[in-house]
Length: 179
Image 1 (spheres, rainbow, N blue to C red):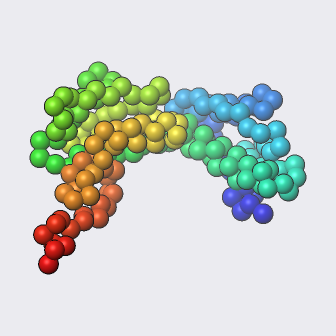
Image 2: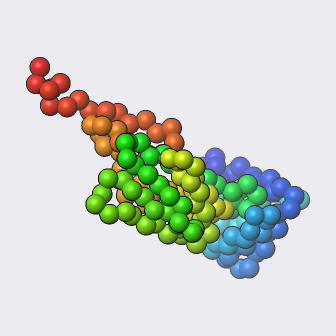
Image 3: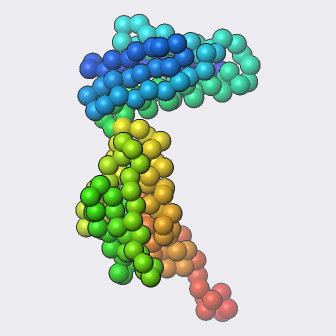
């Protein structure tokens, strides 16, 4: 029995939810999101509360129960508050510059790396920090992962692009292992 799927979602004021068959459109102060869900999960909207009911107890339908609720919750939170992830550049000579809507990274390659944002994602630079924000949680996470992938943190020195607050366990070098 899905505990997440059974938890109702309270819809804040200013958010409009439109059902069109299996697809759902959520409009809010920050924008509009839409998604299509399985017809095996029934979404009931009464008195500004969303309730999710499944059609059977098959394992696939049970898995979709909690997933549907989580995706709807992310859509509602996205159009009201939005999502953001912060990355930081650690290392001497590692630089980032805002270029129109995209970024230019200088991370000790022989060339600079240009990054263009995904649709619906904003990139902002503050010193050696990058803030990725938007209303779609999946797009924000994907964009942050693409930026981190340019130069992931080195396990021996800790230099690279990492999420803000990410802890990197530094491995000992050769001299520390030999003794």
